[in-house]
Image (tube, rainbow, N blue to C red; front, side, top):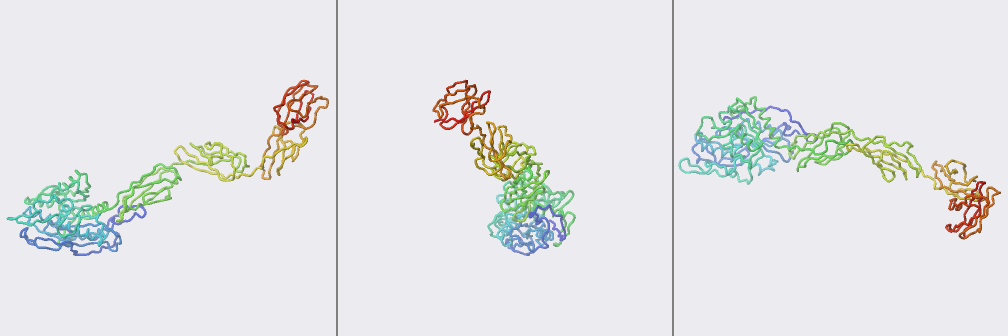
Length: 640
């Protein structure tokens, strides 16, 4: 197969970068100014056919060499590796071919470690068995190169889980067979034979070239118009992601299934990129195939004596290859889990599934991150309307994932506002009314024990001490808002006490201003003493300097004089008495007996003489009053 050509200068638009520190453009564009090349590294030694074909059993051992390209000045401790092989029909070509050198250099500037390898050449172009053995020797050398880098991963700072292989034409044959053919798929031609066509056994797939004990398993494949001996080599157990390119008019390597060089029926039939894609699709495996209608072999240009002349197809092929490698090296897009309809100013937690070694980068539009761990954020959404949360992840290779965008609807939210119509200052023991200005689905006043109904929109607060009292309202969507009011509680005086001295009512203690009230709670006098002009119920109100007051208990007042109408003839005896008294009255009336505190404890109608049982009264002093149509008569009684 014809060899290809190199180009050096090209540039590409960057892919979309992820947010915040996950915005590294590594692998997406050439972020390093140059690559550092180590030439002619020996990765193995194996028996090779001489430059002039003399038979399969005529061999000589040769060193297998490669060129390594690394990003110059790179400090990353683990990097992906791309190994590429040249084209040339297993007859000509080398690692120095310009197309391979150019691609390796450019990928290294993007952050990859790359290698262009030599592999063993030589075959009889009219012998199918010889052609199969040429492919097998090349895949063995590819395996040796993979195992060499796995053995020396620390030296080259390679993550062996991220090794990609590929090649042009014959190099594509080698890469495809190395990655997709198992040991059980070895063709009979790779084993020894005697007699005519004598040949040595080529050995197992992974035991030639060097003795490094590693698997040749790779993460992905790149095929530039390569082919596979049998698509059934591709099995669910060994299939790996593949990007491939092929012209549908290729006369050298079949586009689908056919013979190499079209007319060389003596060579084994092979399956090109279209047939490989069909097999991948049957397995549901990842295969990104680009077909070039009307284009033949060497799609991206020609190589002549190692020099590469690219054409218009080179840049898009290279760019899609770089995109494929990045897609396989970057983390999976993290998927955000959380509420998409939220209340404003309420912390909401969003998470993504955590993967070891990955860093997650969050970006918020319409809110604020108030706390964050690697794979979790707490967001305070601030403004009603449409908002957005985005996240990307970056792995240890500094490859960034695609961004996951999660749309959030921030509701208008509840509004809390307390109305205190009587102000926010109250005397202790006095209730004050509080109301919610805004209507809501639910209300919660707190501390609840200070309110007569902690779940009403309007309620009475009986505060004991000065401090903050709260209202929380919840709207029909569950959004919550809070308001508070500072209530100043002024101390009220202690309840005043009344004592009766003679016919006067006297304040018993207290230091404030005193007011006397009648039974209808109407003011009748001020001061520390009061002489009522009628019997009845009286109250005392004490007002402190801070304006707070307190009321006494009702006092039932009875004057200590004998009668209020001198011509009423009334006598009660014996006095003191035990259980009964005799009442003699000229006029009929009602006899009322009061305790010394002024409380009526007995009442009975009398008409002239009456014998009254007072056994229920306790021992002590009492007042009595006879109320007649002509007036009242009063006096004292003592029960022994």
